[in-house]
Image (cartoon, rainbow, N blue to C red; front, top):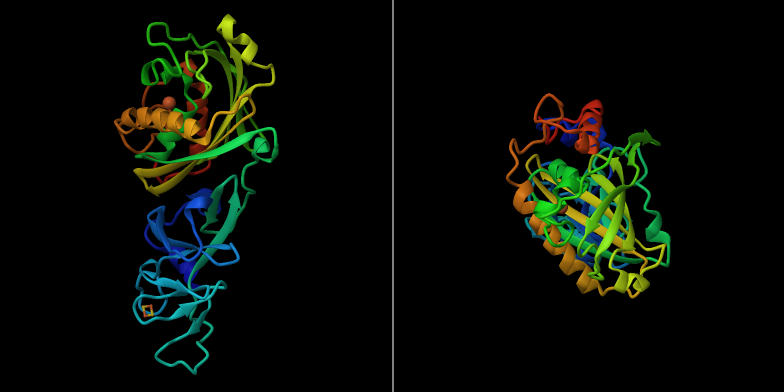
Length: 346
Ligand code: FES
Ligand SMILES: [Fe+2]
């Protein structure tokens, strides 16, 4: 058994659906060449870094020599230098120099424990096992007509509860009154379908009235279509129709606002949410306007979602009380259960 397999066996083994999946651990912009970034995923301490060529790395935050935290060290000439005895590790994770024996070629076993890395949609992803899926698709990211803005990080307790909240429009009039919904007249939610195709959950459009439904700050009728790609990755595409007749001319039939939502489970009850928004309407808002609005909305969400108990999400539908308007949440919980998800769940 190599070190990596050994680490994967430590504590409670992570279920294959999470171990062999891609998880966001940073925004690409957060990881600047020459700096070590500690982070935590599923309770495992990781260090992220980038070399002068722009290649990113995600390793266990642990020196194979005596177990010191690599993230307390530094980077010199594209090598990570351990803070304890100064062993140097290059981009292949191999130790290339033991300063106490500088003329020796370090043994092959002297390696940092590296994980798979990819960058997509302005985000940096890792897989702690062997990837069984591609990173979920995000068509609008590749479409030059769309402006993209990476927002977050947003701290939540349960990542699953944060994701379920992301695709639950019935909370809008209460949690986002005056922004995404109207407190005095909550939208009735008509029947909608949820189905599984290509391994994802999909919905058809859900119609909502939004006083300031997008960063243009115009009243809109919004039609949300959701997808849930993985336990920690979801998406919506919102079709926008300006409802104020005076401002209708500002809109266009093709107007869309999309959000690609990702969740990093730091522990079973702590998570970091990062999103990439894509929008194609004119005039395009500034990055700062988009972020200001998302910062507000996600802070409103966290203030309520973090009060939910139990903090770990129940995936058995006999727990908590479900209504037909919660159909997507119900399907999500059953889908997690069918995947064998235990981490962060009860
Ligand atoms: S613990 Fe890292 S060099 Fe000794
Ligand atoms: Fe919300």
